Amino acid sequence: MDGEIDLETYTISIIRLNTAFKKLEDNEPINEIKEMFNESYNDLNGLYKEIVEDLNQDEVNINEYYLFFSNGKQIFPQYIEHLGKIDETELESEITSLIRVFSNLNKIAEPFSTSEMLK
Image (cartoon, rainbow, N blue to C red; front, side):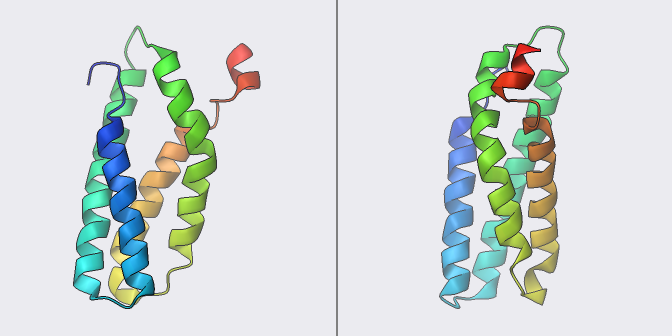
């Protein structure tokens, strides 16, 4: 990655995840939902790894990450909570993976607040 967050991949992953939630609510086939969850996980996990790699560089443009993680501090916990409420054993592995990647992103987001950035 080149110090920029792949917002297109992130957006597509979130749209796919929200579509999967709707399909789950509408009792659509679990296999479709499972595939959508897996695709979202793969994209989000890849994004997470790229972000970690970027943040470990000698020079980091923190402004690129500030907006993303300021927003993420509000959104990531909501996804963790929503995923945690799903009671579908066939999706247990996918749900666990998604919760893990959102938790990892949320850990990075923690210091991204105005007060923390000013310290």
